[in-house]
Image 1 (cartoon, rainbow, N blue to C red):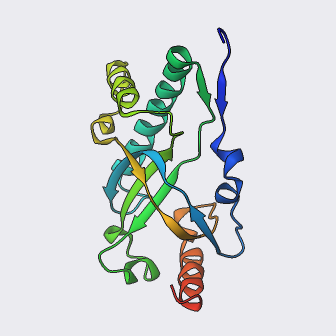
Image 2 (cartoon, rainbow, N blue to C red; image 1 turned 45 degrees about the vertical axis):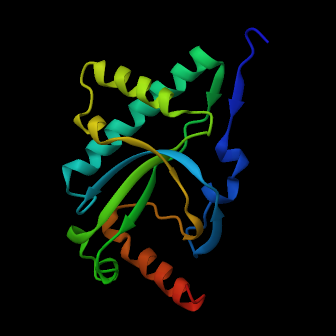
Length: 176
């Protein structure tokens, strides 16, 4: 239908994934999602690459959103930033050794966003004035998380330790 816009809202479709408790961990099963992703390492509160990654992901996601709306008649809700954290030594989390943390920041996308759409949006975003240098590190990839433990943390990174300890205790209790 001419003029008709298809609206996709991953938040509404997967509400349980985007409304975690801030008080206690919970188990969720996460379906595969395409993401825009950027990898890095170090303390999220002090390494410049962390902020640069964020400043690459959001403008690129908006470029994708508006390009899809114009070219394909598809609009989607911008999803919140996700952070995937890991370390060679998992004790680094419990001991707060953030310099050892490795992270991947990402924004989930609807499945309708193709690799070709990503490449076109990336070229458009790079051509803009003040484009983030981290755009060169952004990739589109389907993330298959499966069974996960989640808890909401809000506030400064310096106060994450209590939430991390709660996650680890929950996983141990559940035999994960």
